[in-house]
Amino acid sequence: MKRIIFLVALIAFGFSATAQTMKVQSAYADMKNNRLANAKKNIDAACEHESTKNDPKTWHYAGLIYAKLVEVSQTDDKLFKKQKIETPIPELAETSTQAILKSLEIEKAANTFEYMNANINTLKYIVIYQFNRSFDAFSKGKYAECIPMLENVVKISQIAGDKEITMKSNACLSLSYDATNQKDKAADLYRQLVREKTTEEAIYINLYLANKKSNEMDKAINVLKAGVKNIPSNFKLLGLLTGAYIEAGNKEEADKCIATLKSMADTISQNKPTVLVIIGNSLRDANKMDDAIAMYNQSLSLDPNQNEAASSQTNANFGLGVLYFNWAVDLKDQSDKLPIEAAEAYDKLQVESKAKFTLSIPYFEKVLAKRPNDIATLNALKVIYSRLEMTEKYKEVSAKLEALRTK
Image (cartoon, rainbow, N blue to C red; front, side, top):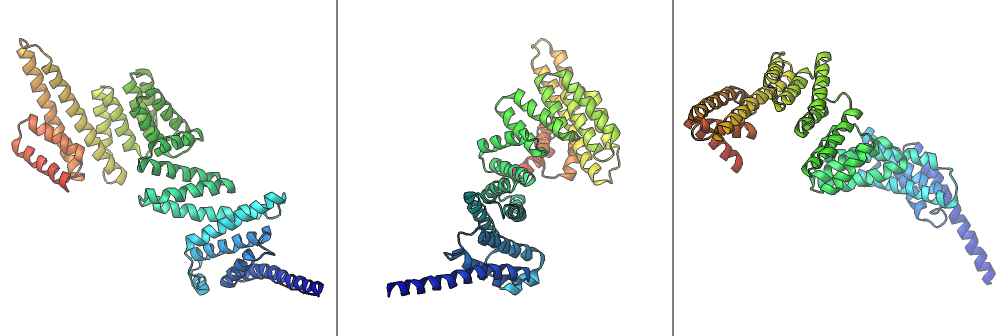
């Protein structure tokens, strides 16, 4: 009697296993015919049943079906709504990912590769969706929120072999670490990205600033050199490298960089005003005042009706304002260091200093006309108005700064 019961049990199990295998096939057929709700229902059952839950094919189809749901949610809203699936899209994407990973895991343990390529292709699709979602949060400044999302994307994109998504995700992740004050994590990832020859400008700039803050100027310069090599057309990085060489006292290398920037300015039309301002800034910092003024004026002479030129004009005006401001400060410092008996020389330097302060005013005021809340410009004008005893102007700027401070 026991044997009969056991045989009945085996027969029942056989029918059940066959039924579950059919559910896997039905799920795939439903997916192909856009009956996605049915496909999901059948594959969910197959993923839980003893006879099919350890089959890589089951999880392969599960990954496909859930990926299809994600795809339809993005491309065919009418069809997706017809399925009446209430599961959030990110959850569908994660379920697809985990199903694919499960299929890969089972095949790896069995040393088989039947579904591997198809699984990787599905994973590549899903990881693009996950990256886009992470990048959306990153773009909105939700750095703490996007960090775990990006960390997951990096892990999955590495499995999928999508180097582009890995690089982009790591770039966003490093900047998010920095924005959330996880400086060590950010710096480590910046270094990795520089070694991998990233073309993201911000990575080089942030690592340069981090090294500079740590008083590691040689490392800071090397980061910028790598950036200029990996992004040869990037004039911002070249401008920073020029400034770094000037700060380090390396006049020869600074002059080489300035010459390269001038060649860029001579051969481009787009961004030409910006490059001219960068050259002006570099020459100003190298104390080549006449050359710097000429570059700023050349930038100002370009068509102001072009958006890029208009923005650069404001930067050129700021650069000229800073040039005359710093010149005035240097002259005042020279006068303050004179002995008491050098009264005539002192008076002369004081007059020259005030003249330079006066020259800087119209440039800073032009900046304020475009950027009325620019703190650096307002602070500079506050100092100037104080030095020149322009009481009403001083009060006006001081009130503006106080209002911005308490805003």
